[in-house]
Image (cartoon, rainbow, N blue to C red; front, side, top):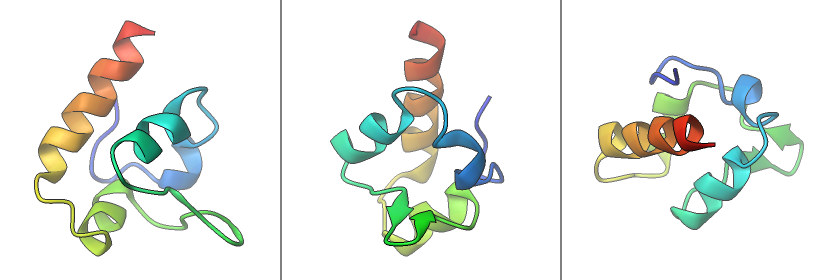
Length: 65
């Protein structure tokens, strides 16, 4: 289960996760690789309006796979 404290580097290796982020307007990677902080911090920096909904959607996406 992904939480706001989950490190981006740990989840971008999961098939489909990068696609989910991109489809929802957030890139989890930088020019040097995976974003080096937590999912919560990434969503804060990217000014995602509802980070909890984003994370809930990501968890649903992963559960359906």
